[in-house]
Image 1 (spheres, rainbow, N blue to C red):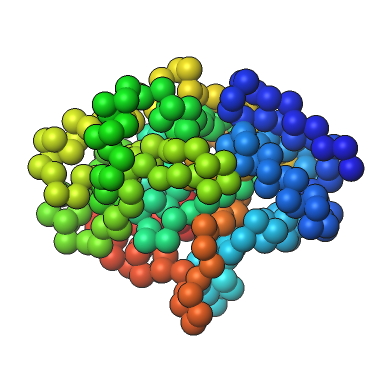
Image 2: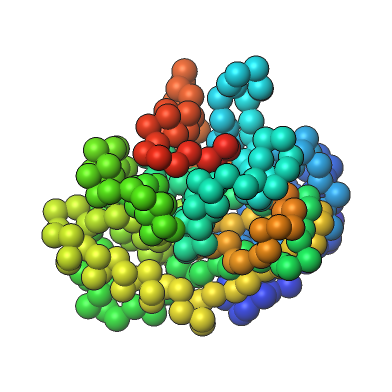
Length: 303
Ligand SMILES: [Fe+2]
């Protein structure tokens, strides 16, 4: 194997070639791919030859896969629908689905609204609209590095509440602050050390609702500042897809957002998602519970 990493920018993002990820991989190759992921934050694999089954098999090399529990006769799902198709495979015209997707168009870390954080998201292009639909990524490690020292000192020990309903509200959904406050809001550190690189990371994004112990106004001023800082052009890359491409990003070292495309064109994108730690014994992924408690909007399948 001659693994080749072609950087997208000098410190963030790389295209990986020289390895066939549609076939079973030995432990050495898996470790080499994880090392590239830890270094670059975003890795792009072109023309992978992956299908649903081999995408799931590949993703299992990286850890515990998040899933949607079996429901109404359908089996457990390990691939999340991140395109614009409904369960029948047609373009989803449900207004609530459109509103839900608008929330994904603001920079975020997947599932930061869960107690157990998500590490890797692996998004494969099955059908790609002619109008595009790239994903943009923001380098939250380099953004942290470049913060003024007084800001680093200020945020070092802060913790934040996260809420999926807050990011949906920003996307235009009619959700009140009372409804957000009625629901569970996981708490995560505002800055954490990325395990694979030892570098510090800004962990806010669109799900980040409030700083623990701070007023709303002070919280928003700081969170909005950090989100704006981390998504300046010098930290952002944009990745386009062709059919068969797959992009892996580490939610614990970058933000991402979906960019625009023509909703009247089919876009079939399938995401395998790895949790940073395995589920505890006997414990299921709590997505079913989360979406049962949704105020007003609920996606057909979680995105
Ligand atoms: Fe996302």
